[in-house]
Image 1 (cartoon, rainbow, N blue to C red):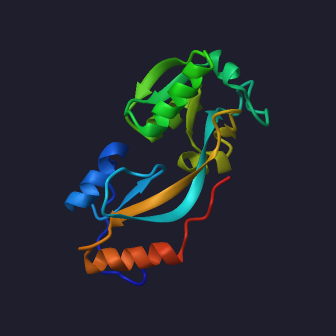
Image 2 (cartoon, one colour):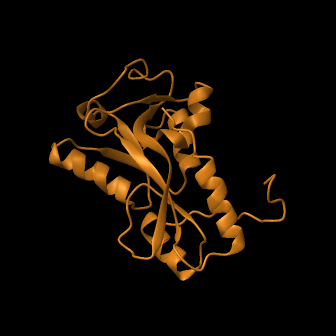
Image 3 (cartoon, one colour):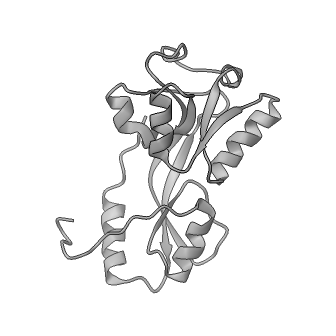
Length: 184
């Protein structure tokens, strides 16, 4: 904002699978992804990394563990996002392949809602660590790696290779010069 005070920024939540299409159509200038889109004509700029973790309230029995197994989560009520995404499908597939059930008891449309539900001890959640930085720092939530599930994921900014606005080019320059600090 300091270098470009006249540029307005509008952040929207878009289902992960639609981001590349909307960027190519010009509905969005940029999108953030943790997978490589199949669509052609996109520039991918790595901006950081993140990992999926189990979020629990501080009073939870698993809160002091350094790592948990998938089987530990099978015993817990899980609060999940109700928007299908490649990350969600990957997690569900991993649990299914190991024949470990997931008891999804609450499905919510927002990350903030999921975090509040976990804080209220309504269940645990598998979310990217980056989504709960403030809650983890304030010790309202604890983040625990899950064996076989938690792994570093590249966060990539995608934009059109051609036909970008001057504002988009300026943002791209700033993003490339100031890579997002890795979390974890």
